[in-house]
Length: 226
Image (cartoon, rainbow, N blue to C red; front, side, top):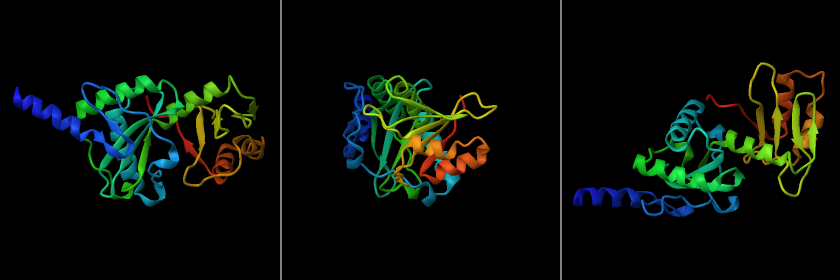
């Protein structure tokens, strides 16, 4: 009995992740919402990492923390030795933040510990479930904002309720849309609707259009395998 209590206390202590205040215990069974973006670690720049190593580590974290049906954005922060120090759910992105906080907490307690990341994530953060969260947000935005449509692309005009920071691309032969989102690293200054208008010319093929969109500081998120 004493051993069991000790293990539960140790797990709870390990999961009280100070920088973002994400304290997970059996009693609370929830991680906290993320604070504003400007007050947390910057996103890792993929250009500073080994592409395969970062992708494999991110996939491993997702498998351990994210439920199949989750539509919320989960942010994972790291200290200067690439150890996980924070896990939170961003309730300003995606959908179903409250349920996601509870589900993530359940997974963290089951894990007991989270593996160190590659050295390139030290002092940075990794965002999980980006595609599903942004796609859910994009679907909601289309009910509130004016939609700008190209031959295969869709975005929203600048809108008070949602940021014009994504482009959906219906690529031939692909069941779910490709999703271009504004890169936090590149910090683009143009709106998604402006980029769509410039890059959506019908004479361009997918590769050319994709290069054009990414040149404006948008990052491509492809549909994850289900």
